[in-house]
Image 1: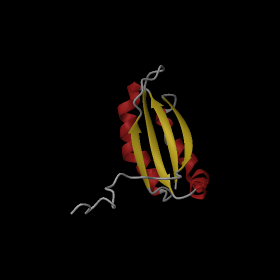
Image 2 (image 1 turned 60 degrees about the horizontal axis):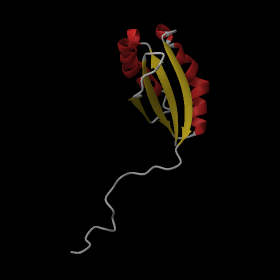
Image 3 (image 1 turned 90 degrees about the vertical axis):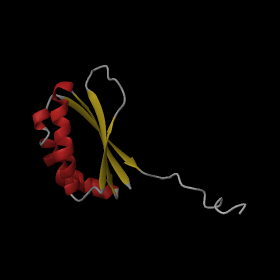
Image 4 (image 1 turned 180 degrees about the vertical axis):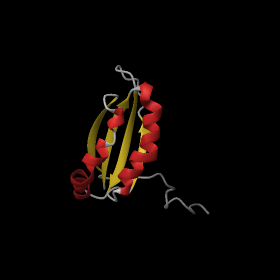
Length: 115
């Protein structure tokens, strides 16, 4: 499993319109490519010296190969749709490989002990 992480700092004067576009159009279009199984949008809890608000969007995909297909087949077209916000945001992209995932759950060995 891989994560395509996009971190964006958006200027405050266009923030509300951008957030509406991200949630209502861009993220659904990313998922509609069929190359991502899900997406999470997170607010980064930091005050930037340059101002603005910062978000991280994580798109989950099954493999590096699928991510490469996204770059070749979809990335340019979808990035071009951010043109109305040009000059109002800074973005950087990171590829992450999930090497382990753990969840909190009851210890199966402790159930029924002492009864």
